[in-house]
Image (cartoon, one colour):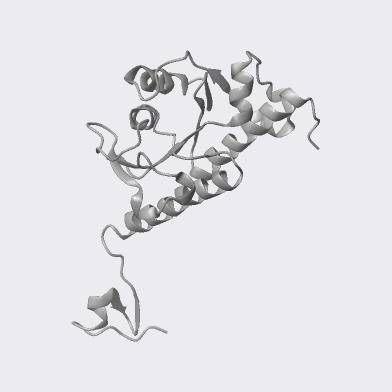
Length: 218
């Protein structure tokens, strides 16, 4: 049981007396801090998971997550996402110039998150089986995998990585799909959460593998 907080003692440490019992006092902005800590941990975990699975190599890939109405978290440029530290994630504005340390695909993430408020996370990776399929001109069929029924695939034109043109095309395409296929440049997936985006990313790679190998997935 909390002791009754005396003025100038426990009250200053975040407790407020209510009757005979002190209860935790909400600190302004505390919810945002906890949310940011959670999102940073989730993005780091995504990098570790994809790296272990061989879906990320060297400096490939970039991830983001909406922080609040004005800002989002974004992976930095020139780093191995499998070895990412939470403090390395960059705070970036949804409108305006991006920090110099932001990912080279920062414009794409910013445009998607700014355009569609329902998107909570954006993941981009150079998935090997997807790239092989796109390179060979083979389509991906979600009917090859029962779990892929919720995926909506959209193939974009081959646009320069990191360009404003790619960012605008991706932001517009999110209205039609949650998995954007980039010829020679991999996949961009969106989700309401980091977990949902990760599920879509991994499922898309499995669809590509099953579609080309003709292996039924049980």
